[in-house]
Amino acid sequence: MKLAIERFGTIHDLVTGVAWDAARLAAEVERRAANLKNLRPGAIVAITHGGTAAFFADLFAVWSTGAAAACLDPALTAGERDNVIRFCGAAIVLGEDGATAGPRTNGNDAPEDAALILFTSGTTGAPKGVVLSSRALAARLELNRRAIGDATLARALVTLPTHFGHGLIGNALTPLTAGGDIALVPRGLTLAQQLGTLVDRHRITFMSSVPSLWQMALRLSPPPSQHTLQRVHVGSAPLSATTWQRIAEWCGCPVVNCYGITETTNWIAGASTAERPPNDGFVGKPWGGRAGVVVNGKIEPMGSGEVAIQSPALMSGYLHRADLTDAVLKDGWYRTGDLGEVNKRGEIRLTGRAKDEINRAGFKVQPAEIDMLLERHPGVAEACTFGVPDSISGETVGIAIRLAPGASETAQSLRGWCLERLRREAAPERWFFVDEIPKTSRGKVSRETVRKSLLEQS
Amino acid sequence: MNAHQTATQILAGALMIDASAVPPDARLGRIEQWDSLAHARLLLALEEKLGRQLSTDEAVAIESLDDIASLLAR
Image 1 (cartoon, rainbow over the protein chains, first blue to last red):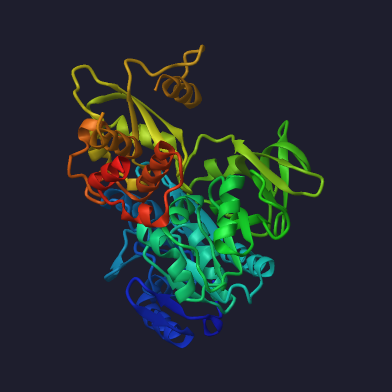
Image 2: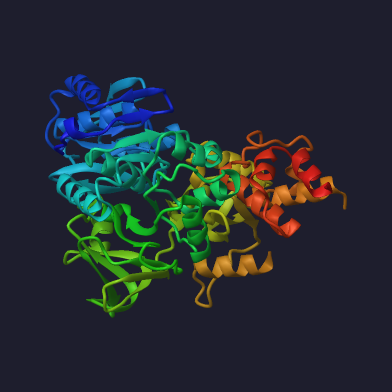
């Protein structure tokens, strides 16, 4: 992945207190790249830290060698991290404290031209790593810049984690490659409370976000008063028209409801309050590429059904998982698993989801992974994980548990057990203990059936 | 039910845990489940209970079970 670092803006890292302009960043990248010599093309380097200026220097150093970077969630448990690193066959692992040799084995290389690998799930079982090529990434950055405009990207606030495609590609790399500055800040409640102040103090022109940040910030932070914001993106989870409108009032600038998935290398489309009032599920027309819907197994240019996307910025596939790749990438189209409508102008409205993935505040959780983990617990006979609607995070992770005979596990004890093995955002929050997992009339476990029957009772 | 009991129930609902698992000295950040999302859920539940939106000052002041109880007792 080739980058013109000399044209980048400054990285203001408010977490560690450093500010690196393009010259300083280039020197850091060069210094780090010197420690990454002798990597073969197709090698993978795992980066296990994130959210700081040092992370970007490591990432750009990896790219300068021609290797692919696998950016891991720093909050993974040690077991999850080892599992993902082994699965990648990483040649080198870059942590906060520097480089260590990875467990790379022969024949485990990344696909040709791979630049970035982001894991969307499966850190306890067989990981699902989205492989993005240099070409796809370059195309997405270019399309984002054209859609947003370089002047608007002058100073960006990064509200999202850097192992998350939306945060890394949309919120950070898009402004940097446009010559803009980025401000890296502590997240969570601190960010929600200080959002207005941060926007004013750093004269922020652009930021992206997930809806749940606004559920907090609209209550906890007074709006900015300096009128520097020019454009704000919200994405990764459904945004109601009401919240969208309140965000636009708080920001005092156009707010864009974006549609993007890691598999489409971040944003594919967005609808702005500058063009029409907020409207539930409306995400506008694709920025480069086009949308279609799957009808009877074929892609149609309009209609309603599963949304499919064609774009110069689609993923190459899932790392070492041809089976999963073949199911979603066909004839140059990516099948998103999202349900929606595409109208005659090519605009998309999202209405629901065909896949059983859980979307917790923008972060995706694969329920089968959680079932398998819990079923390894000696006190659990059977587990069924499902999404529970939630006003703040969109969905939370719910689980039905049938205990083994004589087992005395509780929600508290099982959650504690999970947290030792699973990143926190995927650990179930709502626990339902049942004598039997509800089955469909054909005797199968359906997550939808389980969800409905348990939520109706509670 | 007094304000403290009501506060305990609302907090337990926001944290998605049993009311018996909420200690009387519960504070933001001291209970594993009381994270930023749970906190936002708590503020929303309080708004529903009070039937009005919280002011920013009120929302920012809530950091413990006692804070919730005193807001409800007002």
